[in-house]
Every structure is written in structure tokens, then in C-alpha cells.
Length: 409
Image (cartoon, rainbow, N blue to C red):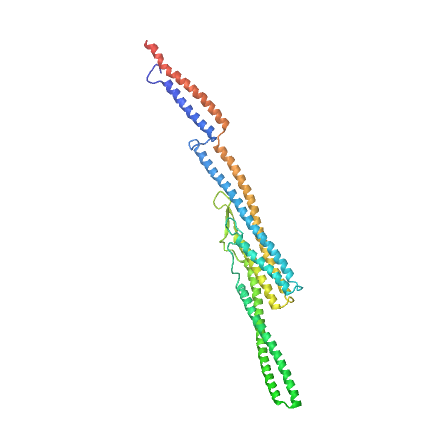
């Protein structure tokens, strides 16, 4: 085809088309160099963009999961710290019980021990309500308030025992007074009978006999009342002793009560659904509640045992049996602490795994999304050279129609 035409300059169109294509390539390279990304829009690489966005979602999820694990570990540490102090309290209670169970102590000394144990029990309850993480009472989730029927019977038995003791003491006092009055009347009657032999005073003998009979009747009545009060006291002691034993066993049995599952904490430590670590905080609450109740019961028991025995001698063996209960509570406490420690260590490995996964996935996403700056600079330089060449060729092509003027002359 001849190039001697005016209306269609094929050389110019060809140069313009190539210049336009080079411009597009130059703009694409410029975007990549300025952003650092190989993929700036779906048009650059549709499949690569989808892969990159999926990886980005995973990376951000993994980073947040790592922070979640760190927060969860802090919560576990707070909980375990509270249990550590409660464990120290229970160690002190055990030490005091070992001391109190020795019958070399009198009742006053055991009451002093009881006062410290009572204060320690109150501190356990106080800590249970005070230790928090982000306003969550980590030691008081799913608290068990009613341990057994024996616990109520035990507390009621203390009141009944005190009432029976009061009645017993009053009857004993009345019996002692009646016995003294009877002894006095008997001596007066004996004196009146001796006087009768000397002076024949029958009137004094009759009056002494009447007073003696009245004193004898009052003594007999007081003795019957005292016997009844003694029976009631012994019955109350027996009932309280049984209630005390049942209450202790009921509290210890609480350790074996299945969890309700209503206070299981979930720590999201993965980027996807159902990737987490769970921990039953009800087990923590139960061991703290049982420890507090057991300590309070021991304090009340020491006071009541002192009332039953009247002296410090004679109930050291009963106190000694409580040491086993405290040991059981400490074993359960240590078991829960060990579980907390296991979860804490697990979260250490979880965080390391999450960080490694995030790092490796970031590297993979970089290979898909990021631009090879050296390569793009090479392409950009080439585009610049081609762009300049295209402009030059377009200028030359635009001059070709001028050659026709030479033919037309």
C-alpha cells in the first residue's frame, strides 16, 4: 500500500497506538513503584488479589488472637495469684489446728486460736469478692452457697446447744442450792431431835420436821429437773456432734459436685471459628467457697467443742480430725492451681505458634501482593525509553503527509 495518502496516516496511528500502550504500562509501573504493591486493584491480578485478601484476614486474626491469648494469660495469672494467697491462709489454718489439737492447751488458749481462724475464714470470703480482672470476680463465678442439709443442722445445733447449756447450768445451780437447803434443814431437824431429849420441845421438832420435808421435796424436784436438763444437754451434744460431722462431710463432698458449665470462660486464640481454649472458673469458685466455709465451720466448732468439754482437756482428738478436712481442701486448691498453671503454659506455646504463623503467612502474602521494586524499576525505565521513542516516531509519522507537497508542485 502506498503511503501517499492524506486522510489516513497509518504510520501515525501505529505510533500513537504503541505510545498509548507504553503509557498504560508506564502508569502501571508508576503505581507499583509508588505503592510498593504489585497488585493495586483486582485488574492487576484477580486471583492474586483474592488470595492476598484472604491471607490478610488470617494475619490480622492471628495477631488479634495472640493479643487475646496474652489477655487470657493475664486473667489466669490474676486468678492464680488469688488462689496462692488463699493457699497460704489454708496452710496457716492447718498449722493452727495442729496446735489446737494438742491437749496441753487450755480452753482460753484454744479460744485465741479460734479467733485467728475465724478472721482467716472472713478474709477468704473477702478475697473471693475482691479479686477481679476487668471487673470480673474471677474467684466468685458460680459460687456455691448451700453445701448440704448438715450445714444448716450444724448452725441450728449451735443455737440449740447453747440453749441446752443455759438450761443445764440453771438446773445445776438450782440443784446445788436445793441440796444445800436440804442439808441445812436436815441439820436443824437433827438438832431439834437432840433438844427434844433434853427439854421436851416438841413444837421445835415439829417445825424442823416440816422444814426438812419441804427441803427434801424441793431437793427431789431440783434433782429431777437437773436430771432432765442433763439428758437434754447430752442429747443436744450428740445431735450437734452428728451435725458437725455431717456438715464437714457435706462441705468436702462439694468438691465432687459436677460443674454446671455456666461459668466456662472461652479464650479465642485462633483466627477462625471454634479455635480457642476454655477454662471452667466454677472449679475456682467452688474450691474457694469450700475453703471459706470449712474455715468458718472449724472456728465455730472449736468454740462449741470448748463449751461441750468445759475445759481444754478432752477434745484434742476431735480437733485433730479436722486436720484431714483442711488437707483435702488444700489438695483440691493445689489441683485447681495446677490446672491454671497448665493453661498458662499452654497459652505460652499458643502465642508462639500464633506469632510464627502470622510471620510466615505475612511472608507468603508479601510474595503475592508486594512488588519487586528492582524489576518494576527496570520496566519503568524501559517504558520511559519506549515512551520517548514513540513520541519521536509519532512526530516523524506526522511529517510524512508533507512529502505529498513535493508531488503536487
